[in-house]
Image 1 (cartoon, helix red, strand yellow):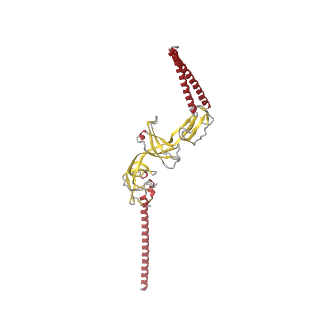
Image 2 (cartoon, one colour):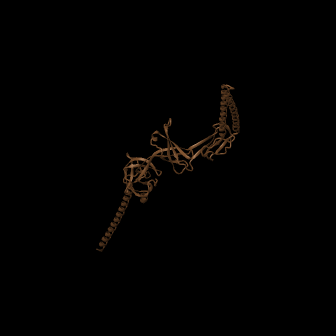
Image 3 (cartoon, one colour):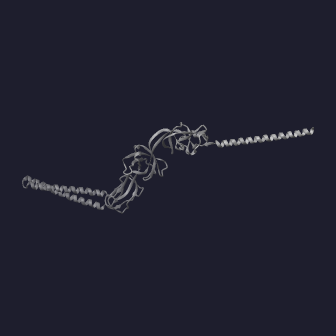
Length: 388
């Protein structure tokens, strides 16, 4: 009996131990399966973390629509100083970049020959004046003799004709002096405007002819941009409209204003020339290339970054963060404009203040779970301050 009892106890202990091992194995297996299912669910429905560079707020923006313009800067006032009389060029010491003031002597043409001609003409005028005096005395004498009856009226008429001829010769001599004095004054070349020398086209000692170019003067205080627009685009342009220009070599945008519009289209191209006055500032030079945007209209509208509007569906849409999920909202787009160096577009179909995904965030399926990395900074960020 004791041996049977011992066998039964051993069997019972073995069965209980085996049952305990089976139970422990089942619990371990169940835990692993639950962990695998959780990992699988996490892989199937991942939580995407979004940073400030991935989202933007739908906000009311002042959008300026406009036209792209480009061209070369030109000085409003330029002058090309030319020789007016032939001769040897003297006294030209100015070089490119030198500053000149209006009326300043730039150079001279050798003037001794012209001074001699003036003196010669003066002497001829003096001789003509002497002839006038002789003819006047002769006429006065003949007039007295006619009254006394010693000579005929015909002789008096002849003396009057001689007097008139002498007076005409004297006036011609005086006019000749003025012409020669003008030539003498033209030997001195003066600056017609204030500015800087941009080109020196002759050298001292060189013999120049009339209309020979000596120097070019440029006034950089007033610059303008000449832009060619198509006939359709030119209709929306008006005097006084503003433009923002990017000029090579200048870090900050430069403001310009439409000053004039050519009333005629260009032959051949049919383009219309528009002239924009550019605010003068250090660093601007004639000949620099400029391009920018001419504002032709403005509109207050709800807007999003252009990169946030996706077009991979039949209708354009934006990806909106609703709670912790992504939703796709169909939108209608309108005016596009640059806001703080980023292109924004007017939209309808999304409420103001909604968070939309920028293009840098990529395409996310509807219902994708997301989490904002810094919700406070995103909520307070002004439009255009965040860059993708």
